[in-house]
Length: 164
Image (cartoon, rainbow, N blue to C red; front, top):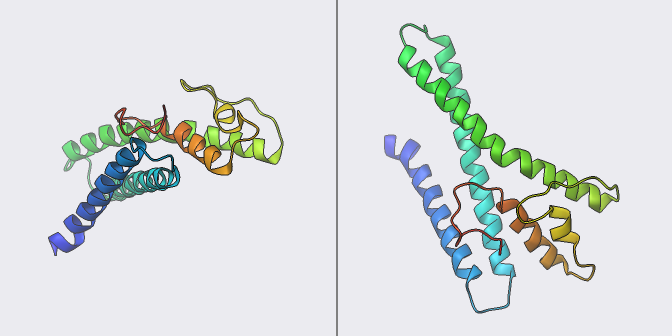
């Protein structure tokens, strides 16, 4: 029961994440000019990262619910450790989510036609990256958008980052 319910799903998602990461690296440094496999592998990598974040946040909410029902003095070490980890989790999620939401809002408002100020990052604004060239194809725009969003992700090595 322990293996089927707890370990196996995490091992499968970890294996899928590792395969996705290897594909991103392989397609990034391939000699081919085809960008679609690279874009798809990067998108799958982002979806798996979002899945991990969702699983961790769901586990944190469940743990907090259970700990709130317990006596603080009986479980004080677990309560204190959970508070530290929950606050660290909140900061980590905020570092990834806030810039992504702001850039996606700027991008969507640009597509709708309203102009807003864009967030400037180390690689430039998302609007400039996506809409910089007027004759860029849809695929080139999507690669630039994914590149800009993954530049916000912490703990990514240079080889796995989509940016130049």
